[in-house]
Length: 68
Length: 108
Image (tube, rainbow over all chains, first blue to last red; front, side, top):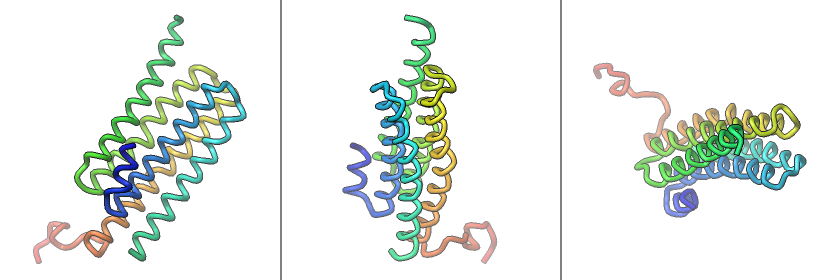
């Protein structure tokens, strides 16, 4: 919720920072959900999500730094 | 309740508390560079506590190893992203990345 507020109300670069933190929170939430459901196959999802969070952050930082 | 269960719950609570504090920090920080401090801490400290909790619960089984992979990727990749974002923010704010003569402490 706080990250969403920063994304909506802040500058684009502030929104990217909030998006990075939201990605990290999502990865940890997915780990907790996989543990809560007691399904070991669900632990694959946070691994993929962590890679995507990294790619997402790099692409946004590159685009904002060069063209905005 | 076994001592191991207490430790697992305490580590989980510490991880969630760290993430919450970092989210509030990102919300109340003044500028983008202050926000980056909280974002960096939120992607290293909180997941580390969660990883410790999962490892204490499962040990080095498949869930434990996959959690090590996820948190390891976050732990390694997050500083790279924070650095790239800081460079972009500096370029957007000041128009350049390198330090000026005044910032380096040199006389003009």
